[in-house]
Image 1 (tube, rainbow, N blue to C red):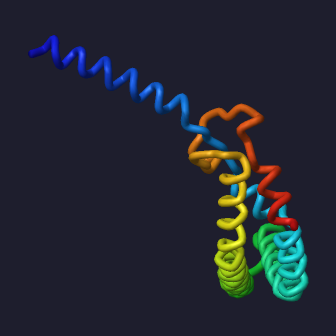
Image 2 (image 1 turned 180 degrees about the horizontal axis):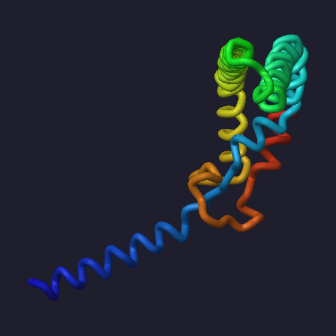
Length: 165
């Protein structure tokens, strides 16, 4: 019985090795291709324009908090307790304002990026399917799932070209 199982196991391993040898695989870095595309670069520029005012506001709050902290560290020893407490309260309030503005900006930017990704997904799917057919592949893997890939199997540049058409 064990001899039969051994023969069967060897036969299955030989068959699976043969099937694996016939499987044609490609690899793409979806993130790199998508964020290097012309659409993504235009989106990034628009995003910077749309949020330039908010970013300036965040920087101003950060700078004001830094100045208050510097003043507190430099002059705090010479101030009476009530002045020091008032300055410390102002500093804490500026830090809260900075954190609020930064979190709001980050959340809004991330939401817009997610909308862009969702909108680009159908185009990426079509381009990947075209790569699959044009290169006569059985499988395309994301580069994050691969430890090493031969350069000729990396289809990221071709995917980027398709996204820019």
